[in-house]
Amino acid sequence: MDDAWVRAIVALPFGLVVGSFMTVAVYRLPKGESVVRPRSRCPACGAEIGARDNIPVFSWLLLRGRCRRCGERISVEYPLVELATASVVVLAAIRFPDPWQAVLVAGLLALMPGIALIDLRHRIIPNRLTYPAFLVFVPVILLAWAIADAADPVWAGLGLLLYGGGLFLVAAISGGMGMGDVKLAALIGLVLGSLGLRFVGVAAAAAIVLGGLGAIVALAMGRGRKSAIPFGPYLAVGAVVAGLWGEALASWYIGRFL
Image (cartoon, rainbow, N blue to C red; front, side, top):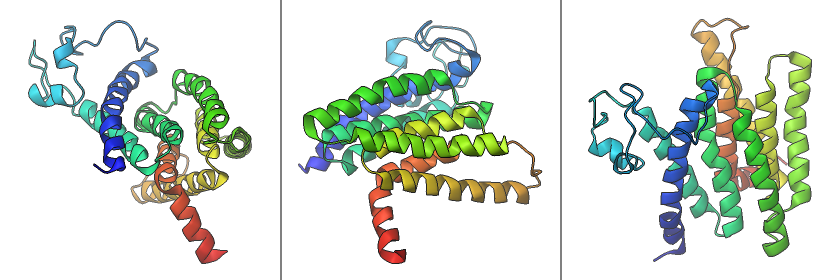
């Protein structure tokens, strides 16, 4: 069996589990609730969801999208977030043969669907997601550098400063961007920067282009110039684009225009 398929098969259950956790984060963090306790419950009847009904994607399909106890519909959002998270984790595992780099990119991208959904819905990017992520990724980057020379902590620091610092200046000058966006950009810059600054450049370029297109669409739909448009989803999509195709896109751009 091809190594890429082996990596994909190994990564899939991890992606589904992280995706299941992110559905809890999407629902609870904006309310200020714990993501650990209490155990998952049906939003309609409050019945605790047992282990057999808490298998990512499959339980929703087997239950036909309804609570086993009360029959109330369970939003399709749950399996979609789980599938989106698992998809980016599997693609990262396929894209990066080096296990350290695969863990770094997959770990970052696994956060993006949930963060994008929270920001789209509530206009916030919770510190309870970004701060723990920094605490996890910094030592992993250092270990990847020390053990396998698979990441560069200096480039990681520069990526953090360039991307996070750049958005901080935009936020300070324009006042139209929140600090949650700045922290997310800093996190993306840290992780992708550890692989090379070209990844950070692609992430920033993709976010800016997509954000501009989104603003044009919003204006065309009649939204005013001062309407709040969350930038977090564009940062998240930019991170996915850069994490999966950043090197190829950067090489194409350099070869074509420089």
